[in-house]
Length: 614
Image 1: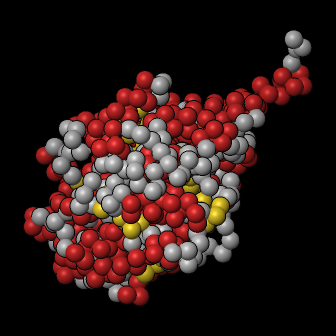
Image 2: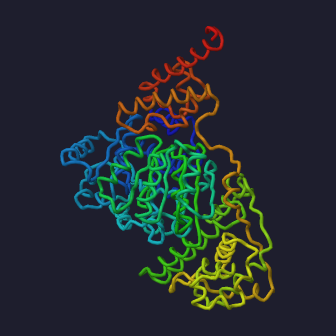
Image 3: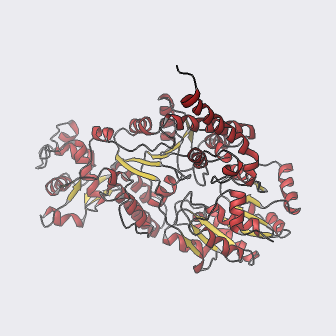
């Protein structure tokens, strides 16, 4: 009798129950239906196609856009006893032919393939010779030309439905707003009723945004305080920023690698492989890095520059804490980020409709940064999801942002824009308000305008915050055609006339930000005895991983080690009850981990009961 999906989940993957909509998606695919699956990163999307591929006759074809990650995905499946392989340009001719023979002989359950290879006429004809269990299209948001990560090859994947209409297809992504979802359905010819949309919430991620002053030094302070030995990703907008930040972190004693599109393919492969397989490494990268990253123990994602949209921000921060353990999403931003991104939009060759959409997305990103409300509520609301109560795990919840009556200050700031000709940036306008008497101000004769020196009650940082918030509120616009100067909008008139007031967020000063008490997010236990066992388990896992030449998390994820730590199994029967311990891993790894657990317990008992006094 054939196994049920739940039996496969337990025997192969070592989990006792499905989460969310996993079972509903699996049942639909087993019945031959199509599906569009939206689940947050770490929500278990892969099980939605892996289990049906094991239960349906034939091989499951997984379309993946990143060649570098296929090896690790396949390694992880093989450690579970699943017959998996990949086909991409990293294989030599003999290796590729061996995979094709295994396919023809029915010796594979899952095959990962890049869209470029899949869409060649030779490979499509080769698939005609195989029984195909299903097609899984991973990172399906790549099909959307309006999305943040468009891949031209993805648009052609409707050929799968045209050539094999009887084979079920599942498109999977962690990030897609309503317009992107509609485009995925249309381009892949999926039925409207095939959507399975889970909550976008990642409650284990703590969101935090701070004002940008000295971003690299701010990053180092954050890392030393909260993640001194953790793996993480730091995003920068430019290649130069990536290189300089990686060098800076190394000089400060961290292990950091650079990753951007200007490096050779071999350099990128090497650095990505090291990040996946080694522990405690930091990758500093442009957005060229990260899509589909399977490393579950990334404890932080930091942004030194403002992402262009909340979709991009959500996708990138979602690479933290895939194991469900606590993680940080930390970002610095300033008005200069907004000026740069607005200029990118304006100077692009895109159609006006696309530019308007990109501007709207950037405005939403800015609103997220400047909010005084729960950041998680703002983020989820953008994706059409309501969070009834504040989350209690973002900076605005943990350290509520005080507001102040900024009406007079805003009027002064707006008046200064007008009096100086609506063509200068926030830094210059701040100098005027503070009464600076430098050469540039004298050259433009702005030492004679009525707003010169009328803002001495606020600091330069406070005035920059006022201007940022006026831009975020739509009262001031950035003049992209000039040099990022600020100009008034129609919305500013009632405020200038005194017909309305405004409350502004009171940004904490830098010393307050440094002193602010925060609950540690470390995944490791703080109790000395538990910490000693935690390190012993990690060391044993590292030894096995090195012997097998796989990342440590492929042996067992941190979440599984934490369960061993909590439950302290003493024999195979108890070890088998740990989440993440399937039948194959039980046979391969149980004895070694039990030896570590039992040796630690014996030593602990000896010290506390029967050992000699010192």
